[in-house]
Image 1 (cartoon, rainbow, N blue to C red):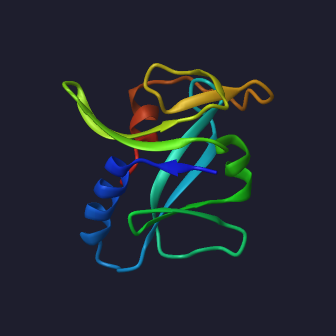
Image 2: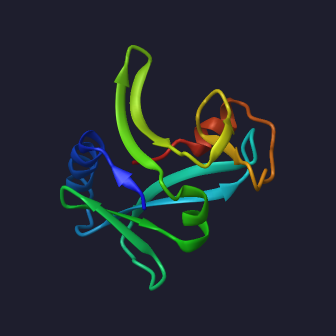
Length: 129
């Protein structure tokens, strides 16, 4: 299961309302790469696949594919603001280490495929959501 905080649901709802195509979902996924081996990804998606798991809060639906779900089980999507900026974060209990930018992690059972983490890599991992 993945949970979505009230703050994240509110911000996602705002962002979804600005999209040209109504009825979109937020897709949360894991991909190989990043400083620690796996990277988080988020983006809007108009298509739900048959094997996607759906997690909902406040009218916002988040899709997660089965491969990503194995690394995200128990995770929480939040939206935070600080003096350094604001954005979505994933609190993942499966991560045993993360990189400084928070976009990359590894688990106890799978180290993934680590790549050098530089500003360009971090920017490509930052979501459009």
